[in-house]
Length: 261
Ligand SMILES: Nc1ncnc2c1ncn2[C@@H]1O[C@H](COP(=O)(O)OP(=O)(O)OP(=O)(O)O)[C@@H](O)[C@H]1O
Ligand SMILES: [Mg+2]
Image (tube, rainbow, N blue to C red; front, top):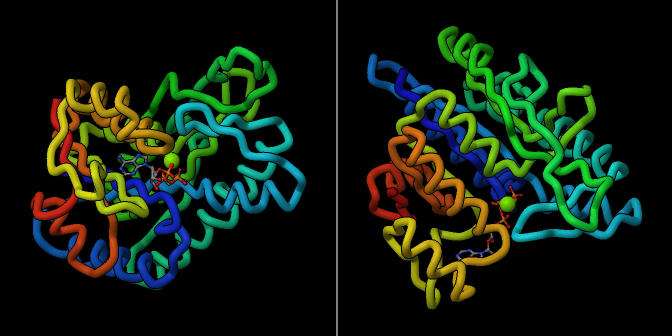
């Protein structure tokens, strides 16, 4: 298999105009030749979760770019990520001519986990992935479907978990031995002094996190990138999306940040 896992996050996951262009590019790249890649989409949607949570009176809380999810917020995560955003993306993909199927970690046990322990938050339902099962994804890909994954999941007792979508993308990429894992977000790549850093390795990533150049939601992306490369994923790319063709430009290393071990 020739798999490319694309995680879309930030406002890109909700911007109709950008999504239309990206899905159109996926539709044209998936067609035809024997070497066409099989795409898997993973979406975040933290900004929408935060907005809806606020309406219900919850205050969003993050540690190192990872959301701490209270039991009440987990219901909102299920509704927003597993419901609204996932359904919306599937509809858009179908409209673009892609045969999309929406699913979360609990479907076919594609990715399941356990609570991520946070010292003073014993109730948190933020999880980490401890197991993956790629059978459902492989079945869908072999039959020509585009899987669109949200980051809801469950633990061994059947309790819901909210997992950072960057980690989900990383684990799915490892399970499918993807040739590329791409993080598309609101930024054109990893930025330093307002310029995109074209390549990063583990040493540079540690140094930039310590220096505060890489912070917040960028931390899980770069940490996952290094781990994914060490587990057989071909390459990890971080970039933005604005115009059709931007995916090809990222894959071609013309834009964005590429991370190697
Ligand atoms: N050096 C850096 N270069 C680029 N962005 C950075 C850097 N350091 C921190 N960031 C922040 O990381 C953010 C991306 O992570 P964020 O979690 O907000 O988005 P996402 O992961 O794409 O979306 P979601 O979490 O909803 O899936 C950027 O918008 C930026 O604010
Ligand atoms: Mg994020």
